Image 1 (tube, rainbow, N blue to C red):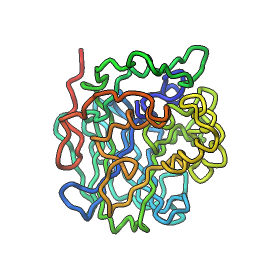
Image 2: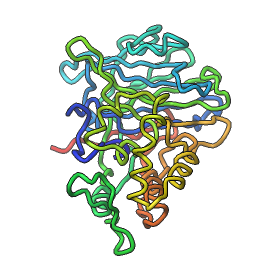
Image 3: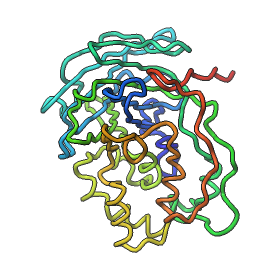
Length: 337
C-alpha cells in the first residue's frame, strides 16, 4: 500500500495494475559505498508490464526539481510467458522529454519471472526487471479499522484514543511485485549534495502519452489524494507540487491530526513532503526520509505524521527475505493456484 492503492476506490491508475507504481527505494549499495541503488516497484500482480508504457526513474541533482538524469524502461509485448525490455539513459535537456529519450544502453534484455534474477551490466551500471518478493509490510485491515472512509471521507476521520486498530497481521508476507532496479556509481548522479528521485509511469493511448502514475514519498499519494484528484496528481510534476497541492494537504492534516494551518505547513516543510520526491544524501546513511530502505516502517511513520503521533505503532517487523546483493529484493513467492 505504499502506493498499492490511491484514493477511496483503492484501485490502480486508469484501472490497470500494470501502471500502478507501488514503491520507490533509494540507498547506498551495501557492498560498495560508492554506488547508489534505486528501485521502482510496479504492478502488485507481478506479471508483465505494459508494452505501451514508459517506466521512468527521474533524478534531479541540483535542487531545481527538474529532471537531470532519466532512466527509461520500455517493455515488449509479452509472449508465451516471456517479455524483454530496453533501457534509455538521458541527461540534461533530453532527460525532460516525456518520451524514452537519450541513448539505448540496454537492448532486449530478458524480464525475470522465475527465482533466478537475470541481471544486466551496461558498463559500470547494473539493471534488473522482473518479479520479486515485495518488501513492503503493512496491516491493511488495520488501516481500514483506523480510518472512517464512509461517504468518501478519504482517510480523514481516524479512530483514536480507543482500542488499537491494528490486527498484527502483515498483509504482504506472500506478495510479489514487479521490480525495476538500477545500481550506478554515485559519482554519475553528481549529487549536490543530494539527489531527488521520483518514478513516473506514462502510457500511450490513441497516440497520446498520458502520465498515469508517479511515486516519491511512501504513502503520500495513497493518503492525501482523493478519487477526484488522483488523476491530476499523478499527471502533475514535482516542480508544481507546493503551489498546487499544499492547501489540500493542509486541509487533510487538519482532519487527521487536528493540525492548525501553521502546524501543518511546518510539518510538511520539516518532512519535505512537498514536492513529492524522495530525497537522498548519499554521504549519509539511508533511512527514510533520507532515501528509503526495506526496513523502514513507512506506515508507522505516515500514520504518525497524519495523526500527530497519536496512533500506536503497528508492531509489524520487516520482511526477512531480502538479499544482500543486487537486485536486493527476495526470490518471488510461488503463485497461488
